[in-house]
Length: 182
Image 1: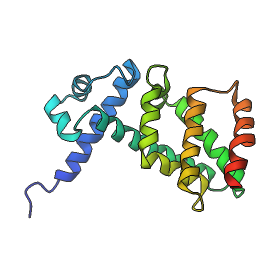
Image 2: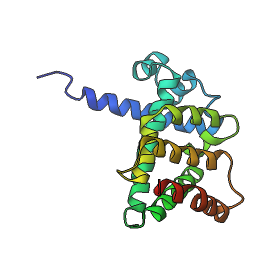
Image 3: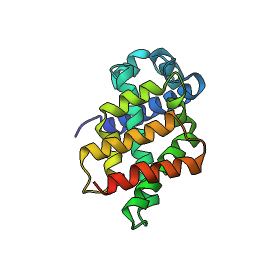
């Protein structure tokens, strides 16, 4: 029997604590302005310990965004599960994602003027993020449709509509109907 039987559990807990601490510092200072030393300090660990869990700032950003995307995706999937109409389900999913990000400070900070490009870069290269798009569209969707859904969400976050009614009309007319019927 291994003497470190809680090793994996401790590693996961430590990584989660670091990501939770990063979230607080991101909200306070903005994602792009926060370095690894500040995150280590906020987490109460050394930079060496931080680098044991995340090899660099990009890896930490990816882990943070993936964790939040999974949580957000699960919540949205539960919200849209009872909706039978595929077009209405997609509209609701897109708008729920936009609303949830805007109302969650640890997510909204990624879309502030100086930090939005970081979110775009991560979304463009992330299979987890693109997987969210596929979840919103259903199993028959292709990868291109899923990526397009994510880009629409990012677009609405970076360049909001006039109001919620305007955004719903845009999604209904130019996104959901097209993606569902292609």
